[in-house]
Image 1: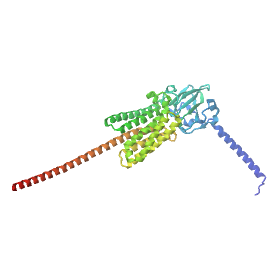
Image 2 (image 1 turned 90 degrees about the horizontal axis):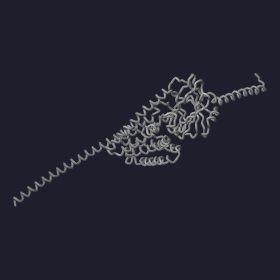
Image 3 (image 1 turned 90 degrees about the vertical axis):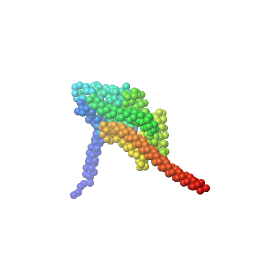
Image 4 (image 1 turned 180 degrees about the horizontal axis):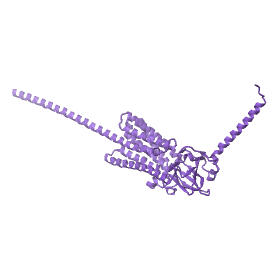
Length: 455
């Protein structure tokens, strides 16, 4: 079969132009799509009392932290949809805009509560529309004193009144010097109360446990006068007590700490002090100076580094100090775990409890980090996994101290028994020697009498 050479290029050219026009249309559609409804709006009233807004939000990065609300609204085509429950940003110097839509199809305004379930946001500016389309800015975040926040809660909560008759976009601006995730949840009043009650119940149990163990340890320190209890008390007071109180956003409610310094800069100070205090505790408990002299010198160097970070936290920006404190904490965790493992291999019975305690803290911290990065679901366990690990750690560290004291007590009793046995043996030898001497004296005396009689 014969085809004309003149018609083939014409057919290919038309086909190419047709495909080119379709591809161009698809490209334009993909570019313009985020400017339209990339994510579906949230309809109110919602069926559940708490709804994760992660799959309903769109995200825009602001590298210079300079965009105004009008400029963000004009950049509608630059917003990108998010599909996960938690938007993970990580360490980033940029600002971040979030957009979502709420729809109220009823005839009356509805009140909802927008919760930002992370305490590491420095600034949170929520722009709430009214019925005329005008926006009102509501501020919150770590740098806003607790009394000035729109709602008194350990997390950042915004009361939102959704006007009736349609849908409207809401804008949230976020920036932070810390690692940043954007976990947004929409609550009814019942859902917010239930969420806070569940969280506060766990926190009350945790704080009661730590307070009880602290008071009991103070009693044992006064009774036994063992310095290992002093290190233990210092560690759980600073780490399990002060650090997690601020970490949970309870510094204002419990301690009256209103200054924003306590919600940000104090974190790097307390985490470094905690690492500094656990190291002398481990050195005394596991006798590293005698049993692991090389690792003991490494621990001393890490201790000095912790004090340096504490001092720097008062003079450098928080974004620098926290980037020093976090790797230092990871190195401390790895070294102390290695020390515990080596001590266990050498037969130290207290190392079993120390290794379990330290492993629980590490596992809990990893689970919390995975939750923060959006890699595992946010639930009651992952939300408090770090503190669960810390509570288990405090319990097993106390067991490690008890085992150490029991071991020393058994050794002391064994040494006393050995000393008593040695003393008894010495007395028996002395008695036998005295008997032999007395017998010799008697024999000599009898010999002398016999000699005198003959004389």
